[in-house]
Length: 407
Image (tube, rainbow, N blue to C red; front, side, top):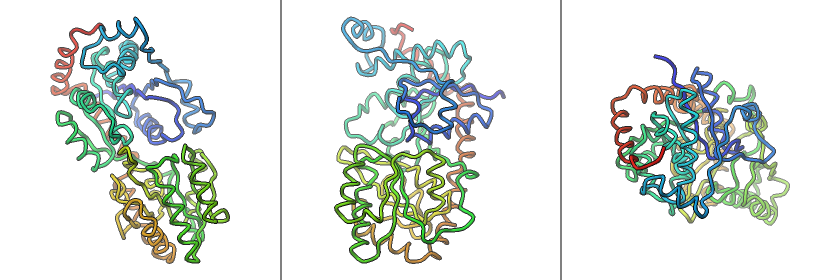
């Protein structure tokens, strides 16, 4: 059986925070899968991971047309009534991608995030006469205002809806009863992300991510303030940037944590790795935002486990699937700064306990979160779509549903 030729459709490229997508693309290529990347937007921020910078010349950017005046009316007539108005530009972009895929000889289309990228993938697949799939993560499925009728439609016509943890799989099975939901954990390169040769008992508490409410960085700062008030301050490094960055920094100053907490901003993967390997502990106290948004399978906790670090997290979505409570770290209630402080103090008080839990975390990463296993599962999923009778039936249904569309 020949290796699949897979087109990836992304909302934007390169995004510094979406390291899981970059790792996935590189792992598939290492496995011999031909991968071509299409993006609906170019992220113009200057900083990017070195691997993304090297990949950038190969990425094809396809702008979604604007919905204005006569063009909007014409587009509405060209696509089926099932397509919501705000998704029409992405359907049109997908049609353009599909024509390129016919020439390239793609066998499958995959998107990351339910929404615009998945819409584009669906119509690219229809135009090229192949199957599509998409990975559903967190912000694309947990926000209260989502159009679930459309997302369920996309899922029902897809070869598969991939998602990153069992919590998500249960959630999506209720929301997308007609879809095939497949859980494939995000993976980590265990050869790159590995424990330091020598542990650093005096190392800092480390976390990383976008500074948004759901990450719980504000709760972490409150917990560190509690520990300082108790007379047991710990150093911490909070990596990342975002709209909550200045608010969290200001609160740290107000709590007298300037000596103890460092905010280096956004770092590249090599920089994060160096910081992680000097750490004593990883902490990410995720919360559920007011609009329902929450994290699913936080990358920093996967990377920490691969580096052999004990972790503190919260009972949100897939976090307990990463941290086995009292075995690889501690899991506490979201939003509870006192409980978080207690958990941090419990682990930081005993280097031996942290080392034991860190070793267990590394073993858990090896059994569940190995990038090679994840890429093998994805490659198998992409390959089966070209020969599955179930997919043939799905494509026929998809074609009938779109017989009025102009392709």
